[in-house]
Length: 338
Image 1: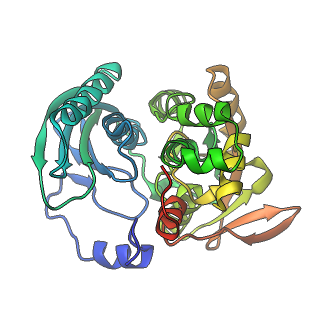
Image 2: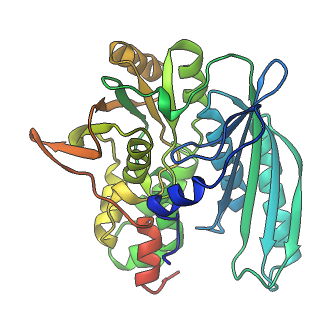
């Protein structure tokens, strides 16, 4: 099998075998859902888990942000974090200390408590891996889930696609990019994407939740915008029409992806947030987010039907599908030049 996410068909087959016997589980494992929701006495507990496998640079920082985003997409505040660190035998003490320091500092910056985890040197991995579990809570009764999305709803996207992927490519393939003629200053700017505009979507998620009637939120991660939209479309059997010209992408991301023959629609895109809301409030939501310095684009709409379609000059064509993240494909097809 290819590296990366399991194919949707296989995931649906596996998930169909999982059934909860606990009535407190409001939302369990399902395609397109970022986090589980469990009813407590007077609030809901929101739980998510994600590993970081694509990069070892700033891996502790990545781990906290990626998992915190999943909680925020439920309109919940991330509060508690557990980290499992699996390291190969040649890892030195300073590397472990650095990862733990990153995790602690990132948790502190987001007002999250590091409450536990596990650290191990193991023959089972050849690269450093951090797998995180984040917990949060919400005290309102609104449950954000994919089934809330209805025909006629608008689809918004904050910031721009490929934020995380651009940073990963610039870090992991710096020498390749330099040899290809990309200016060092642009590479440095791309490497800084994970900090500016940054990977966190907590602010825009909680702002949207607190001020508008949001149907659903989702942060595109592995497989990029394309995979995120296709997963959501399949999970609710609705058709998404996406205006290609409205998809925000930076010129740096375009340049790096063009040079490496990578489609930016299929690369890691943590840092942007998909928001679904009624069309009547889409423009106001967009303007409100931009007033709070969060660039936002209305990229499409939900319709009856199936599949995700790109609209180019009034002509619909299927959204490109990727059997794995484009970065994973590139790594497998080329020899890394670091």
